Image (cartoon, rainbow, N blue to C red; front, side):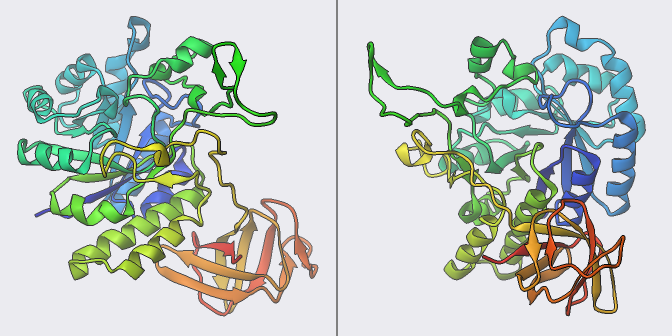
Length: 399
């Protein structure tokens, strides 16, 4: 049995490399064309080549999203783009278009074709139909329950990919046109305005029901499927997918690192204890999450999975520094958020368990002046650190 894949998102080259270093087995990225995240930085062909060389050098994979619902004008230069991806060594494309699938099969047959969640796949008959199209994998709709995933897995031998963390759609995956209607931005061509997360007044007829300064939205809480990882591994699901190509490097490091530990722990011990689940949930909460729920895994969601009258963000300023170098008890860091002498901080990294220490020394790298406060993002500092750090480790304040 192959070990389950942990698949992470990335909006730019730095984020992709961080996701891979922190434990992802593969990353999915969007190019400058055919991708649904138009506001992400997205990748040039040169970036994709760089990423493929990096990923393959550490025995990991790169998938490129081509998941728009294409109109005729969206298909210009499709064959050239697929040939460019093939020359870069891309492992798979993720798409919702049968035409793109068949064109890729003809132009670049080495590249695997994965069917996007935009196709709202919720049953095994559909999956078996896609198998006839010579695809390698389908990404299930987020609206499948665990029982439905089990039934699907028992009735197809095509690889299944499921979402385990991140944003949920207030409609069926790939079926929402709310953004199109309200802003003329096509959600299925990369322009979603996330209208479901706006603040709304609530009316019954002409009578406004919400109080002054009270608003409602129709968005969903984010998905967090930590407690379902053992079930999905036991079902022989091929890939566990994290959502969030717009998320920060710190978010990716925290979330990817956490799920990496969960997966490895289950393979090692065959079980996860309650106190371990709680530790993982607390670890995830250190990222700048929205409120979370289990989505559809337990069945049709209830009011507990919706946001309605609550803010959907939980921003934090815990992330304070990115490690650039370490030598003889002194770490060189690039600052991200305010911190000062005396703060208790936690270091973590791809090969570093969470380790706490107190900031006792703070020196400006440019002036060599002693400081008491770090106020300016991206400023570089030398700090004391009793534990050996490595490049790409991160620091966060302990509340």
